[in-house]
Length: 65
Image 1 (spheres, helix red, strand yellow):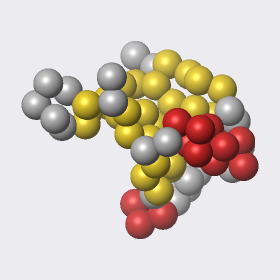
Image 2 (cartoon, helix red, strand yellow):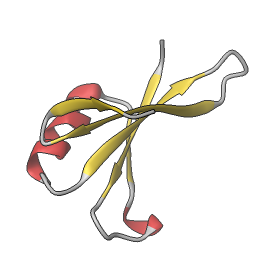
Image 3 (cartoon, helix red, strand yellow):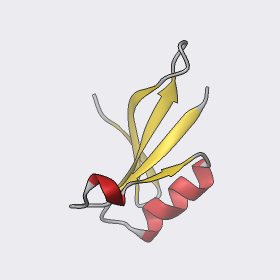
Image 4 (cartoon, one colour):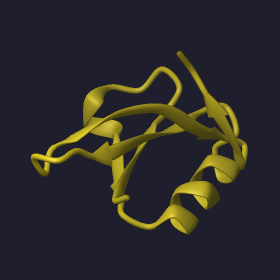
């Protein structure tokens, strides 16, 4: 499955978001900015990226529902 990772700075604006294609870079950023998180989006059957309801925070993977 293809994923896209979006860094969301705690309290930041949408202009502050950073998009990653690399899982490793996403995890590194989540460690570097421990008060923020990196949301995961997965590619659906139409080629669109949709929320996976998973994110990295401080290098750890979390799931929400």
